[in-house]
Length: 294
Length: 274
Image 1 (cartoon, rainbow over the protein chains, first blue to last red):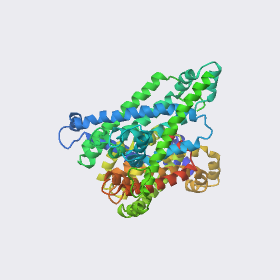
Image 2 (tube, chains in turn yellow, orange; image 1 turned 90 degrees about the vertical axis):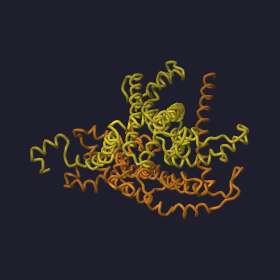
Image 3 (cartoon, one colour; image 1 turned 180 degrees about the horizontal axis):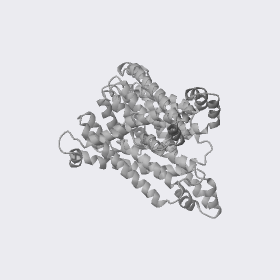
Image 4 (cartoon, each protein chain N blue to C red; image 1 turned 135 degrees about the vertical axis):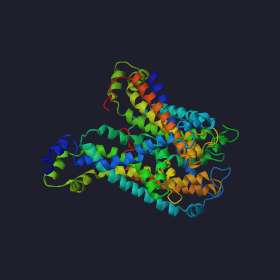
């Protein structure tokens, strides 16, 4: 309080800068030092290759099909699984919203997210393997004549991303759906709108901003798939995703500049997709973002 | 009649999808647990017999006691430090408007939105150059990167719920900032702190990417050790890897159950929105 006598300090206080504000500093310094600085350092490092001119790393990446094809391979996994998870989440969330005891279901669904991709990969290796319960079921029922190959290929990675990704998109969608005032839909029903019209004319436009964010977050997670692509996929072939080559460049070849360049390209693809999604959201939906009671 | 039939058909379809997902999820977990106790398991629904020997084997061969100690140390340090850094920062963010506050908010959001493997590779590079990676401190620092912003973002709404007049009264009676925290804020914020730190705990046990990129042979946590065990499958029997997976699952799910007493399951994914 005595400090307020000093004019400069007082000016600072009036702008909201005092002892309490300084409490934010340790957190800010920490994030700057261990998140922002490494990122900028990696960006600079990617332009200072071990040999060659400043673009040599990026030229290496786009000249070597072994490297640049990983972008395409990763998109082939990430885009379908993101769309599938999100499209499935919407009807399920709309139905679960009406349930009174959601807690049991949401608790079960939060388990795979908590366990994480390494455990899901190990679980699916046992469960989907040639002697696992799934193949046993398919053989006994007679759906398949011989065990279906679901691990160490594209489908293993796909299924692991459904197991960890669907609960994520579902819980996120559920939180957006419960933010929509049910009175809006009831009003539509009263004015004679059928279920289909209510969904496309009322719910979907209100849900669009949330869905864009869900799609963006789900895509970014799927695009950086790593443990299940190694353990459950074919890391030398169809599931040679971009994070595998980034890891190999850094920790197997010890070429940190090239690894940084790959990490930066990874970030770039994510940014492009997110900007495109949020841009599409603004095209489809013009209006206040927080509609309804949420 | 026609409409209600279509509506109920639709709801049957939706519930079938949910049931299909849940059944497969539980079967996946179940097959790991059964396999970890099984003796020989070939062309039958269940193994020929049951045994606990794989646990004894995993305990000795994977150095589980060491790994569990490291995991506890890493998780404990991350929980404690993220609380000490994050709670005061959240208090400042909730109570003051200062120039650049939006930029600071963005700074706290980014580590939660950018996936760990993207920023983990440059971060591990920096930590290796500082000779921190490979040691337990490197792992702790790496895990704090998402944990600190997470605590800040969870705590801001909890601080906002507290009536500022309570703090003003404490100040009038002469409490300094430290005393204000110890005697007024921390007791009032206990539910929020508990929720935030328990979620950090569960997330740190399961955080694979950042630990994997920064851990050395003596600083592996349980999830990274499990990854290496699965990666080198064939060296040891699959049942002992599954035994280790069960130990990991039991650890994670026990803490998840504790955490769910204080938070709603949807909060685990929606933290980014707050």
